[in-house]
Image (cartoon, rainbow, N blue to C red; front, side):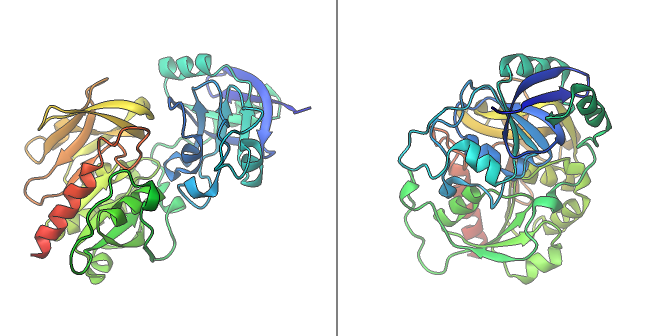
Length: 373
């Protein structure tokens, strides 16, 4: 028999379930993601660092887990919430069942929560801190109220690499849109790791780049000393305004090399251009977020995972809004004409079916190639 476990929010709302995964008690910001699949990618996405993630789809674990699909070396989230875990796996690629994977990697989880009710509560009342574990409800409530908010916290340095390394793996047989190999030397792209996903690095390699990954705190001078042809600004967790060293670095790089940012990388780019960011009520997390490309009028089905957004008005006259979220009108893409730097808030590498946004990697590499000429 599994132990009784509870998820308790800072506002006092409590949810009962059964303990799953690793033993222990954790705190984090409660959030939800609407993806019907991709639970392993969620578990290992560093952008979820510091959060207790709720899966809104009713059943997880159907296809098991395999090490090939991990987006990082280990899970970064604080806790995992599910309605039901499949009793058996049904995929030829599965190496573990979900419970074994969670237990071996130290993820505290809960099964049996009415996730529809929880999701609606977070949607209506907004993001807040929560506690998860087998302690009594009152103790967990005290922990949730005392937990430090993610606002103003620099989480990027906690998930970033400690040293430089080269990344050489592409998409291989899983590439649905293989590129023609570029002639001559491969352009050198330095990827600044604020919590980068392996899929992004694979897409850069598949697009023709020779990739060097560097820590989040790497200075502009250190990046330029590596002689890059372009600089990529990765996704990552937390409040972009707290990553002040990255903002200074990007401000110094503007105009010196082509820049491309995804998610937190775009937010850091916006701050480096003199803009501002703000926290969304409950964020955008899921696999079917509609985004409109304002240049073409084309609507892309996108994967997203962010709790902060760029204040477009704060960048008026400095850069152009290139993409917009069709649900709430928030900024999903920016273009800085003077330097050629650009970014998107969504994840073009995360193809949960469509491959609508893969062109962005090609756009970046085309600019990198042009700058080399």
